[in-house]
Amino acid sequence: MKAPLVALLFAAFASASAQNPSSPLPPACGPNNVDFDVKLDKSPHALTPPESGKARIYILQDIGVAGPPGFTTATGPTMFAVDGAWAGAIHGAAYFSIPVDPGEHHICAATRYFDRVAGTSVLALAHLHTEAGKSYYYRLRLGEYIELEPLDTDEGDFVIPNYPLSISHPKK
Image 1 (tube, one colour):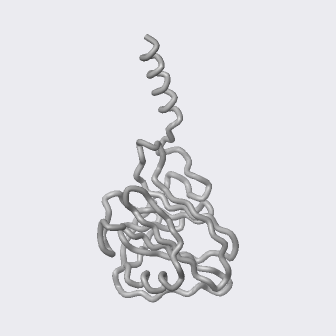
Image 2 (image 1 turned 90 degrees about the horizontal axis):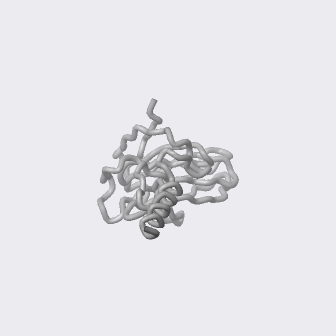
Image 3 (image 1 turned 120 degrees about the horizontal axis):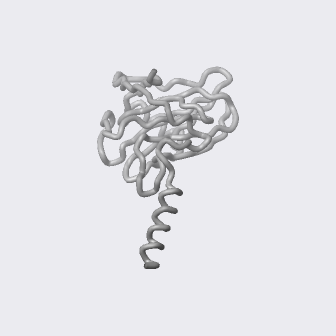
């Protein structure tokens, strides 16, 4: 009698502690009720230098070993936020960039995929301090889990122009 009761209590506790996919994301992310329309521009692109008095953050989504540039995953777009506001999205192996003011920033990359084992949305977080006139590069890798890592400037300058540009707009 005790074993089934303990199992029932444990299951209830685990269920209550699991995060609901509609529950709030960390403060670096945007609100949970936003989706993006995403298109890829596969024409050649030059890197965009930072605007005067701004820094620029480049995000490169790499599908890992699952596919080449332009490969599209079935999980939908990965959304990116800076300081709690969604800035754009990428679908497949592609990149986008955003201007930011100099200073400390918090980045969130989140997929719509919900990890039922962990009870959380699949996401990665990072923070950085930017300076005006400089560009910063991050690579997001999708695979068994999501990984956001800084890229060396030389590598970012070399690799990113080989990927399609992701153009995204919030869905209305």
